[in-house]
Every structure is written in structure tokens, then in C-alpha cells.
Length: 278
Image (tube, rainbow, N blue to C red):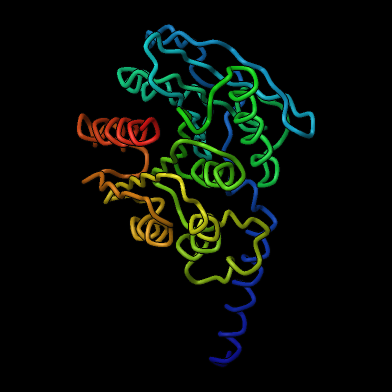
């Protein structure tokens, strides 16, 4: 077999593999845990939650947890990442409570107790529905005390909501620039980024966001490269801050970051509230 034939065979295999990956796109992106998988006893973490059921624009029934704080200075709307469900954030929720925040975390369609199947348009709808729930049902004043907090894929949803609604501030942790950039990182030898349906392009939206923004990223992130987090930050409009979580990977940010990590969150929220109330 000639070198040309060998090269042609390898190229054909790569193209077939690329077609296979595109066909399985949603399975690669989303890794939901459906109820009863998860930790559905929040009291075991000494966390008291209000079960919330609400609907997305297309009628999909969604589930969330509202965790009130007796002395809340603000409300945090939490957009979680692509794996697990809201119950897998219980330890993190527990450690956030000392910041005196009301917390609302919800599951996108297909996750936890939420109905449906996830896709990009759908989880954007779900994110908007969660925002609307806080404004309409909990009477949160968005410009006064609502902070959008998105981690990883959830950061893309937080950016989408911020691009269409008012909020006091935006917190993006371990967030990438776009699906195309992530595809280039995961499949460097294949032009997957040019053919996938999903866009998840936060980098196109952050230049237009004028609200205060805090970017956090683990310096040893093994899933979303640190350089993508910096690239997203650099594209964003002012006002903005960047916080390095030294030594942290993708899923251990609050553990590795420890006291300084939570202090950075608290400082951003407190400073933003002071500016908004003057």
C-alpha cells in the first residue's frame, strides 16, 4: 500500500470519526443525572431548602431549590455545569451560606427532577425561566441585589441571561469562550468546531455586558483551559475583575481556593452592592 493510500485511509477514518462525534454531540456535551440519582437529603448537609417547581417558556416543568438566608444581603442565581444535578452542589452551597445570600439553584431540562431533554436553546429558556421566577415570585429587585453565578457551561447560560436582563453583577467561574474553542481543545486534530450545532459563544456577548463582572478560573483547570478563561475576560467590557484560583482544577475550585476564594466572592458582591446603593 502506498503512502498516499495510507494517508487517504487515515483521513477517511478521521472523517468518519468526526461524523460520529457530531451525531453524538448532545451526549458529549450533557451528562445529566436524573432523579433519584444524587443526594436528595439536603438536611444531611444542614441545608434547608424550599422545593420549587416552575415552567420554561415551552411548558417544560423544571425543578429548583431556593435556600433563603435570614440576613440576606443579596440573591445568587446559580447556573450549574453540564454534569450531575443540583444535589451535587450541596457541599458548595453549605460553604456559601456564611456569605449571607439567598441562593436559587435549578436543574436544566433533563437534569434531576426537571422534565425534558437538554439542548442549547432549551437550557437558555430554562435559565430565563429561573430568572423570571426570582423576579416574579420572590420579588427580587435585579439591579439592587441579584447576582448571576455561572460555573463552566452554566457560565454560558449566565451570560445569555445577562445579555437580555438586568442584574447587579455577573460571576463567571471556569467558563470557556465558545463551543468552537472547546472543540478545538478536546479534538485538536479534527475540525469539529466548524460543524457542531452548538455555539455557546459567550465571547460574542461579553463585550456588550456593562454590569460588574468577576471572572474566576483555576490555574490548573484540566477541562476548560485557563487561557480560555483569560481570553473571555479580555474580551469583556469594563467593569471587570479576574481572580486566579491558584492550583485549582475544574471541579475543586472552592475546595482548593478555600477562605481566600470565598473572600473574593464576598468582596465582589459587597463592593458591587455599595456602588449600587450610593
